[in-house]
Image (cartoon, rainbow, N blue to C red; front, side, top):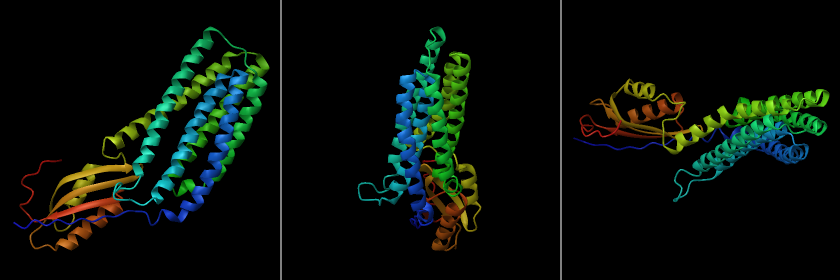
Length: 306
């Protein structure tokens, strides 16, 4: 029985360069603004003894991480694959995201611990410093939102960074409110309550980031691919008798790879079916890189995988 192997690859890079340069310069501006303000906020948080300001700085770290990863993603996608890294450097982005998530777990833990300590022993907060720094922070966030808004429509990468900056603007508003309460009433618990709110706000996103990065590293099926629908849609393509050994994994966020064995109906043209399957998975199922092996009927009897 004839056994025919054929591999077909598709890297969806060509359309990503259209906005990439523009996105890169905007991201760089927002990254620099965020980085400079992050340092200011940490210094001000420590000197004013404001936990809410430190919690917002922790949130700003998530911004800085997301912006850095978005920029890193664009840069990495430009680097060519080589004999040692046949898929290029996509996984480096995932490792950076994992480090970011672990750092955020530590920041969240510290804020929770410190807030509960302060409920037992309240600390006087320099609300005047907190107020002007948090207003400045809101200004930095608004500048980031303005710069990233248009790019977020075209790029998933940028959309994630945009949402981070947007949520940080909400956190900054919280700090402004707490600083105003402390300033006008002297009720220092407001600072701890808002810091806890920000920590709670960070946690779900940190958990999602952590589970997604671990999922990628464990070669799990990407969340944006329905493997059951993918399998049945390939199986119902004209000329396809069967589908086996279907594997889908993510090289990095939004860059999914697939390998599959497709069994031909007798008399069908090998190359035509190959092109049909290839075109279908890339256009309909968020697959960027597909390897398709086409076989004659009767070759799939020793199937060992899913």
